[in-house]
Image (tube, rainbow, N blue to C red; front, side, top):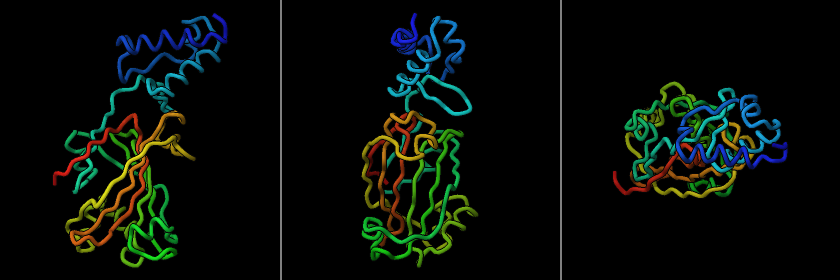
Length: 237
């Protein structure tokens, strides 16, 4: 087998995945092991694995290895009362998060319109990565009026959840006013953060949360791993 004959490696591994010889979640052999097995060069092995990852059949996780991709691990229901932790807790999934960046900024035209502000008004922005059982599933930004929620990020870090943080402001309930979903390729550092192939699409959810009277609370733009999250749309409470 020549170095250029990567398709043979690709075909064999693809068939083994489809036939269940390599089961979902299984770590595939290392690159040297595949080189020895197929009698080919590293270039062919890397190209075959890269193509399988691009197609979503393999997941390359930095520091852990390359795994056969499972079905989406999270069923995330988007409804009037969308609550991430409740969604995941019902699936016996441990959810955690990490604050990547936070601070105040001037509202762009889109953010201002969503929050009922003027373009250039000050908003509090927090960028977080969300993990389910220690695997990253989403990364994105949340924007809130800085005048109304000047220390939201600090309270959120202390209390551990968005719902509890709103309660500390006297807001005991809130609704999802709308959610829009579209797909695209990851940008910037999104693929690295989500530990997925840069040509594997992501799902972008833009959403507005409001008080019961419709007053805007938070506008979000979150990028979700299409490999690990499956969305359902519901009108249930």
